[in-house]
Image (cartoon, rainbow, N blue to C red; front, top):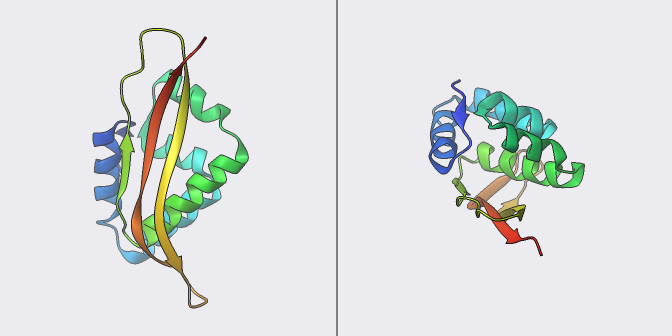
Length: 127
């Protein structure tokens, strides 16, 4: 698979590429993103040094949540969006949020889900 830039267009191109895979290959990607979100992102996206540093600083709990959300979305071929505005020109704190609008159920096997997820980058001015 092709590495994409970590931009809204790059994320959409990656999702489009993933959803062309067979169910078996896509399930393998879903397992990989859930097992290690950070490694999966680095393997599938071309990151700037600032993006890579930011990713490296994310804690395990948020990485697990992002990985599980992506895994369920992949398995069900659901939309995943990235909202990534340009940073301010002044000092700022960067946040990554996940609007998880998934409805998930299971019959004991693979999760069955509807909905979508959106990752949103936001900034707050440093005082």
